[in-house]
Length: 332
Picture 1 (cartoon, rainbow, N blue to C red):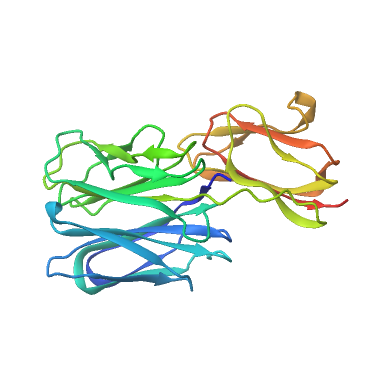
Picture 2: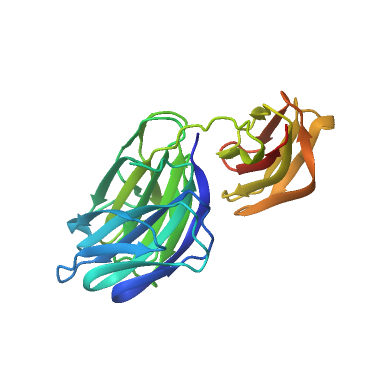
């Protein structure tokens, strides 16, 4: 099963100097989603990372020290949220002593393997990049289609800059602290096992260079198609292709109750869904617009019904953008 974006951003916070800093989540995290938190600080007097904690979750943290760009420590922490995490929850980073330029920000992903989810991680730094310099975290090796590759970069002690993701990558965060450092983060859901190098292009040279860290997360395996009566996830969360494809084949009589399409891209995407082979007469969504960075949700009292053997087909006007979830009730 391909991993998908649950929330492109769950918020961010930063401080001129602090030993602890809270991120109050701005979006709810879905049950079973994996949270990825990026964080950094300047270890001006040998401060060290202590922990990321919060939400009653178990966190796994990794870090690098970028000596070439002003002694910055950059890292990431991941945690699976088995029952989800409500908006307004607190995630806290703690360091050994008050550190300059402390910050944290994050995203969440559906469909990540619950046990030992890290495929690979890597980091790079550049103390003297040229103008319009490409940044990246180095190559990340994935083991299967549907894995997540993601990276975070800090451009240190410079005027506020802007980064554009490399082709096939999507930006989740970009912000600057006044006229000082600038941070950005990108991700991609890969189509095959292999080596991938997430990154972007800064709009100018950096006075003090950049440092980046990245991680590849394993997608969970496909679940079996349910046949037991009850309420089930029929499809997703997964991204749609640009050509009509079968999303679900009913093993027994099935009533579709909820359809949720999320569009993390920067433009409007149209979604078409049909019961059976795609045609005007079979469509239950006919080029339904899903706004940029937003969702379209259909909750039905009078359910669409599939008989055993019937299928749901679907496609999007732009491949690899919209994330779709379909829930329903099996009623044999």
